[in-house]
Image (tube, rainbow, N blue to C red; front, side, top):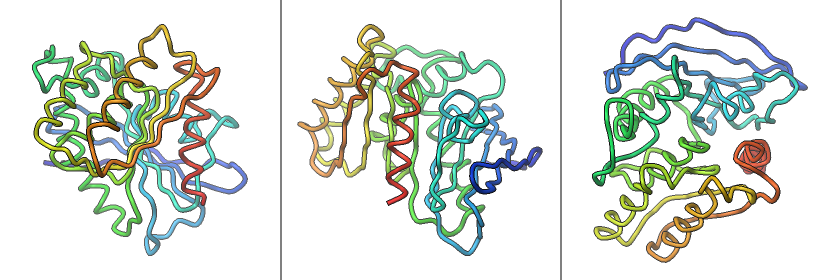
Length: 260
């Protein structure tokens, strides 16, 4: 159940034209925690126009700050066809990211602060997305962008009962996490279904060898292209990019899709 949303901060930034960024506090009863939700609006925003609604995880970290434009001159270029909805943890994000983004559906390790991706899924499905749909009635499409642990969660969304987004953008996903629990979830899904109707845009850094990202992402990709019909998937490796330097080129490539 969604409770009162309090708008507490709003400001304007300039990147060649004026774009409004507003922030809200959102309490989730599914998780019993608070999140900061930030919106980056296009130039000349109008409630009478349909927009692409792009949800971005890690709103207070490098991914979210680059897309929201919180770093001043170092900011992403957003098409006027898009509205950004960034989700940020409040408090200890080190702990809360592992709670919200790492799954444990197939018996993987979990405790109160780890492996609760299913709760975050329900938070999106039953609380945040309905609120956003009321706020922005006219929508062209929806998408989710995640990096690292939130990139893992982006992939996890593919194997849930309801597809919450039209497009999924996973940057350097931590497929290795929780003893590769995502691969176990994928295998269980494959035993039930051979069709996966989803759109996935997958990227990893060419230098992500020692953090297990590249190897486990490759394994995930090889599996899903063999297992499913109906899946539209693109996988690219960003040469000379590590786990953090990949964010800018990966995001720029994603957002360019909405400028065409």
